[in-house]
Image (cartoon, rainbow, N blue to C red; front, side):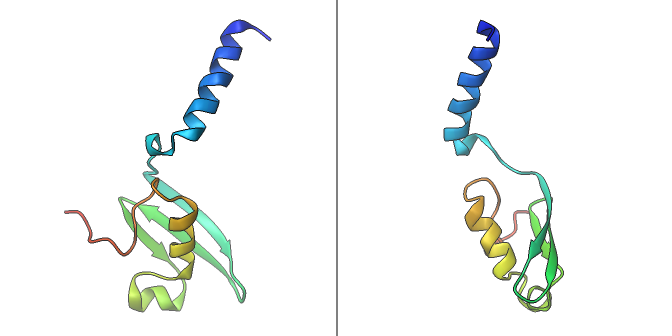
Length: 83
């Protein structure tokens, strides 16, 4: 392996352990729920989910699961919106 590529691989390993360096600006996922699939989006720091619970509460098990999975790299749906 070329030394320049080795350096990039080493840097990638370093970055992978430094989660604070990553902040998602936009995200779209399909979440396979127990009953149905759901579409979840993160755009401009705001979560959206197509499940019924989210339409009332502006949070749901799907967005909370993604927050936990991507902790520190995405905003919390329960946090006050930044203006």
